[in-house]
Length: 272
Length: 271
Image 1: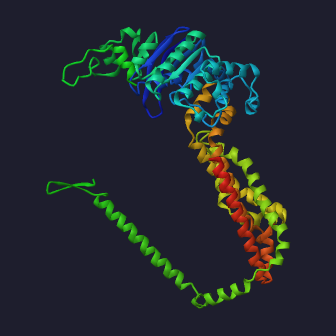
Image 2 (image 1 turned 90 degrees about the vertical axis):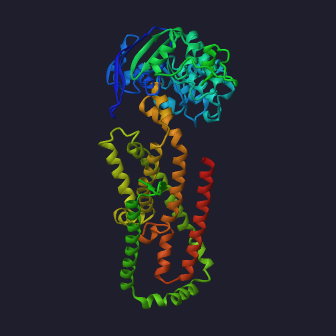
Image 3 (image 1 turned 45 degrees about the vertical axis):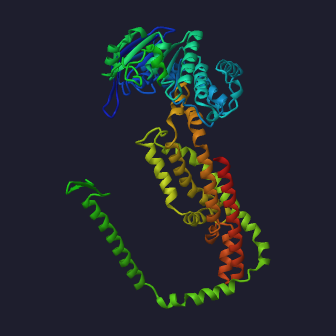
């Protein structure tokens, strides 16, 4: 479905963010990209829809070489890639409905969008999505009147209204509290399953990634250093991804003796 | 380094010694410049006139009061012209200012090498010429009257509005723009959905602010024949009709106070 081939990105400042990344995502697979800050996760995701122009390599989406497209064809290709952002990236002074409908901008002409005369079918679908993310009553509120979790659900609805084949998700939970983070991750994964979408999710929170996704790719300094199931994330693997750290460390009780080891998964999921 | 070691104690100073010295030298140079300038001004002043000033001022003031209230009837029409010059001039400036700002802002310009400098040049040339001078030129080109005033105000305001607007555009949050781009939206749609909502409050504030300034500027445009209350002011001064001049001042003051109140209220409502 999505095929990334020998992708290289060098910024004009000389920093090399990606050093020949190769990755294949089959249809319907939800994949988490983990790695330390600066490993190139965000760059990789942005190279896929060319918000960042890759220096070398190819991105192939459903057989089409995205890296070779001209401006108009690129816009058409972007419609098939929904994007969800860390700080939600909503247009704060627009209403929730306008934000969701902006997911259709790739399909609707300029004047229609200027006068907000979106086709009735689009509006109908927007309402359905707002129902699905439980924000129907908020549709006339301004986006900056919502809480973090609500904003992210607007962001999700906007991405889905594009009718995408794949979701590119950049740190969806980094600005959210632990409980909302889990709800948002659950929602994204459920929606991917319902609509048979593939997803590429950047994550800081290893525990959360383990809970929700079927495949994890570890990135370090622009190179893939791990690609496998969540169960394979042993302390050794985490060390290769993130560097030296005592991954098995447990909280010490007041008397100095070690407490009962908690289930690793839950402990990590609680940390955000 | 601001930290020195003296007798085993670390002494911290705000600036290193050399820097401190430079700061003092700067102040010294500034003071000397002011003293020298003052001497130059004093040498070129006819002090007899200056010593005379309080008496002259009191004399003028005495001739200015009481204002000639009856004169007001003839002022409404030119005052209305003045307000129209300011309002229409501002509106006419907003139309070209928006695209110029988009071309000048670093994050929206199509070409930072070719288009941006051209847009900046437009802005600078519009700003560097006072509306009174624009009016002077325009009166000789399109003849005296309100139209020359409107165009003069518009030409001066384009640069002002475009400059403040492009600065606002450069300060927007990039994330929504990225998000709108990622939906597959075209360039114009990115501007209207991603950028416009973010700069709309700034744009409204700038426009009202400029209108407020233009009310004041348009009161003097009549001095060069570009219509409005300035025409009456000039003819009154020419015939030494000081009570009429006072009356005009009072009306201008009232208009400015009202326009300021309106613009304050509008800005408050937007933010």
